[in-house]
Amino acid sequence: MAEPPQRRRPEESRLSLKHVRELDGMRAVAIAIVFVAHCGLEDVIPGGFGVTIFFFLSGYLITTLLRSEAQETRRIDLRAFYIRRTLRIWPSLYITVFLTLMLSWWLPNPRPAEPWGVFGQLAFLSNYPSLFGNAAGVPGLPLWSLAVEEHFYLIFPLVFAVFFARRSPRQAAVFCAVACVAVLLTRIVTAYTISDIGHIYYWSHTRIDSILFGCCLALWHNPVLDEDAWRPRKIHLWLAVAVILACFLFRDEMFRQTLRYSLQGIALFVVFSYLIGDQGLFGRAMSSRLLRRVALYSYTLYLVHVPLIQLVRWLAPDMGMAGVIALSGALSMAYAAAMYTAVEAPAARWRRRLHTEDR
Image (cartoon, rainbow, N blue to C red):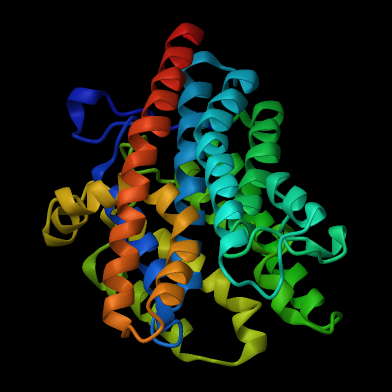
């Protein structure tokens, strides 16, 4: 069995497991893409790619933490992991769902929320609406992607703890890569067997590879953990960007619901490999104070931005696109800042305390 790559010591690199500033920039870019697309520029800026970036980030960060814990303790504390994830996700989510539900009673809505639909959202099953008779949930909440991530959080750490905590990370990377291929094949088969291939975009079993590509980077040539990590050259970065742009331009629906996600995952593997630890212009831009602030609020921004866009459009139906972006963006930032101060920061302190006690 191959020995796992050596972990970098803190004094050997400015990178740390606790915080990688360049990833803040990518998180901010992701929420900006999603927000601007939902403001009405979806045909120009595809919001789905912002979600794909979020998926890759989640896979990379969670797996890096799991791998580090396994290298240090030779085990994974699943109880502590699930408690930390619960404290991270649930408080802001349930508060925002409740407030948005109240807002939806005030705003005109062709499909009022139904109990089964709301239950599906709260149970992280909204990306499988047929389970609940396609009942309407709280309008405007893009919770399907949270459902995909939650399913990953439920399954992957358990698989990692049972099969890979004491094995070479590269063996786990091979498993994740094979799983990515299996998901691609599942998409292709599904695309030829269902009437509405648009469902492929939302289902966990057809989208989870976007997270698994991030897992692959965390396990194989991780820029944070591996001294011998592959460092792409600029030509590799530009080729990856070209692949991403080509995916935007090629509009064939079969391609978009099958191969597109795999190509974007491979391209993001290269982009993230280049970005993490980059001290050039790209890395400095992604580490800027503004982007780090947006990233700090990105989770709640993602939860609340669509309802607030809808509110602005209802209050000012004649407002132009720029005004909608500016006003709904300001309202979203204000709400996210308040939620961070009142809810997320205290929950983060509890998570850190739990982590310290477990160690």
